[in-house]
Image (cartoon, rainbow, N blue to C red; front, side, top):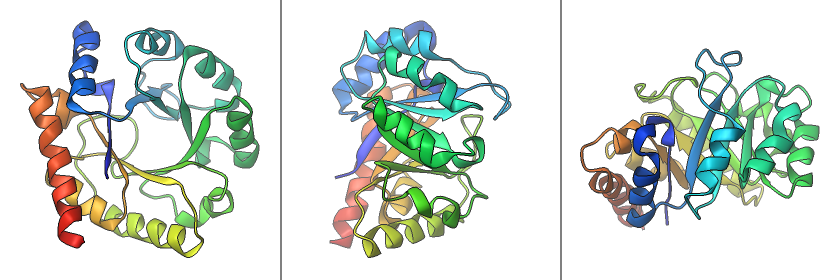
Amino acid sequence: MVKMAPSVLSADFAQLAEQIRIVEEAGADWIHLDVMDGHYVPNLTFGPLVISGIRKITHLPLDAHLMIENADLHLPAFHQAGVDQLTVHVEACPHLWATIDKIHDLDLKAGVTLNPATPLSLIEPVLSRVELVLVMTVEPGFGGQRFIPDMVEKIAALDAYKKKNDLRFEIQVDGGIDETTAPRVVRAGATVLVAGSSIFGEPDIAAAFHRIKKAAETSLLKMA
């Protein structure tokens, strides 16, 4: 079964509680939180204070994607805000193994991200230690970008590595995910889909959510 993790970066923050409620009732598995610091990526979004407010309005797991420098300094604050898992970037974490240990020491799940130009070889040393690998199918930093088709091969290579080494991490995909691209990435091995503007940017949020999920799951059924 494909997991769905709507990204609230694209939500209307004036109606955030209501829009989270809509995706919860539609069947969302996680709530995805895109944290940007204006340094590692050019955009600036939100941090632990906003996340602590989100924690109060949903029972769903909070999946925080940290597009930030000096992530180690901020891990305890995100833990206190109520996240369930933290995903970091190898380029921003020079001591990645230690960062993952620190996340686990907080009793949180740990993830690592592959940017479009980041080779799989850079994260292979930690793949046995993480619960999640996030494959970016756009450049990190802004919502609403166009899907990069070449990333489908990277997802397939990651899935092949996972199976060859009998690993259990989730393969999450973020960037340009909609009812057209979702089937392509799940066929390649994605297990969790992040979608933002293609859900929250639509007039009927629940209907948009269901279209993407149905497209993904139908594609998997055809493979069976």
